[in-house]
Length: 198
Image (tube, rainbow, N blue to C red; front, side):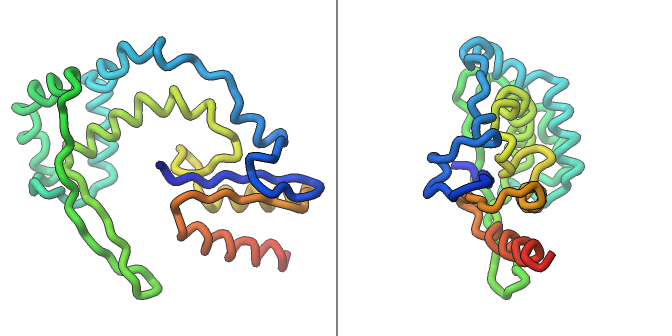
């Protein structure tokens, strides 16, 4: 399940769960979405389209990053990938492609603990980005305006700023539904402390 941060703010009594809330902010998630079946026939063709893959490669290259378990660096990727592309494309279109394993890497956190990362091979990062570029315009418009987790141009800090704006507008209760990202609680506590002192 992807990580999400969803906020619901209300003027009166606080609901016991996010599902009980029916506010303008939470109702926006009920936007009518086109049936996926109308576009699913050509989704994979759109994903493996040369222009989409080139954009995905540019984004992955701009993000930089270390090689995955196969050892292929960003600099070596184009010469390694070109001769293999017809086979990757065939597997993707047939539904038989299997991503490679991710390389495990631990990096230190400010509190002294370790953050575990999984670093995929460059080809898998490019394919993930290509999929994201095709699916985001389909699904993102139907998401709630109060949803901030892993969405373009949104962050936990943006969610906290929205809460601040709601408080200034007279709302006094906020239900925060957080799934799978404990570090957001630290940001939330820090920013709510600032709200209380403002």
